[in-house]
Image 1 (tube, rainbow, N blue to C red):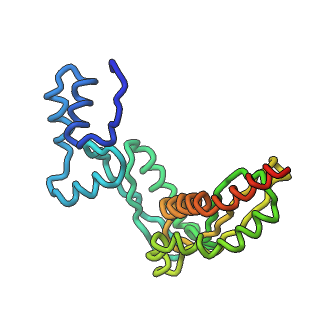
Image 2 (tube, rainbow, N blue to C red):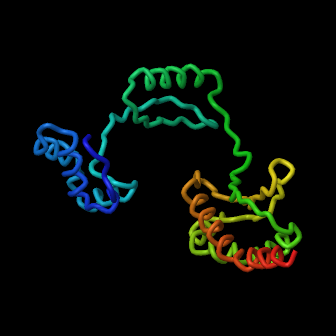
Amino acid sequence: MNKAVAGFSKLSKEDKINWIANEFFSVPKDAVTTIKQYWNSNEKLQQLHDEFIENTITNFYLPMGIAPNFLVNGNYYSIPMVIEESSVVAAAAKSAKFWSTRGGFKTTVLNSEKIGQVHFIYKGDVQKLELFFKENKPKFFARTASITKNMQKRGGGILDIQLINKTKELDNYFQLHVTFETKDSMGANFINSCLEQLAETLKEESNDLMFFQKKKKTFK
């Protein structure tokens, strides 16, 4: 690679491929052909692949195997496993068969709640911050409504938002501590999107609070 690339994410898919082919391969034309041969022939499915992650140029295929005989809570399951190491599938299948003759696996869902935090530094009057949070807490829920509506239809969403004073651990350190219910989903993207919006709302709504603190300092 001879130089860094600027604005790569803004390039078209075709331009991304051409850049990579020309920068990293001695025969760019062959590289382009190889990259494109793994595209899905179904354009709609390929579009889904393209939208999964940033800067998609092609698809990466791995073999899918089956590990059978998983006895879980009284029911037998065959587990699909996508991995390049054959011994992993073999070991899983052997373990499943071994434990199936000994009662199998028992599972219990203890809780599907998850937490996330927005961390920030605040050097002003703590009581002012607490009052600010109490007054603006409804806005935190309202500003995330478009993100949480689908999760709420499944019985999930944001359960609570708390202001946590962490100044005993670090000077001027506070958190927005958020509890989520994500039901059957892992919820990582959902949680991150909510936290990003909460951070943006905190920044927008705290302008008056910060302005008050700055004015207060000028009169000392």
